[in-house]
Image 1 (cartoon, rainbow, N blue to C red):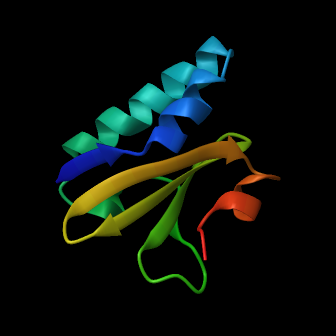
Image 2 (cartoon, rainbow, N blue to C red):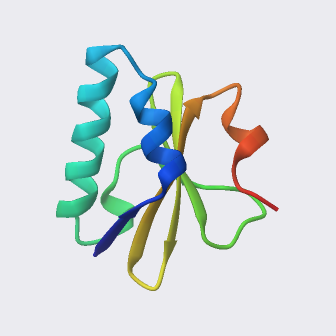
Amino acid sequence: MKIKFESSFQRDVKKIQDKKLSTQIKNVISLVKEVQSVQDIPNFRKITGSRYYYRIRVGNYRIGCKYQNNEFTFIRFLHRKDIYHYFPES
């Protein structure tokens, strides 16, 4: 599976100062690299009404991502109250 990171995701992660949360993000990224199928990713759900957009729950935060043609793109990382205002873009 090919992994890509949008600049918005990198910017969102850079703002996080909680070391425990940073470790959880790294664990999710390494898990995504290792899995054979996206169904093996815990807390992975499809965004309602979107064909290729998904979210991964990390505590009170969500990782917004896109999975298409065996390519996994991390797009946003925001608090659960904010993520759906910015992701997915219309």
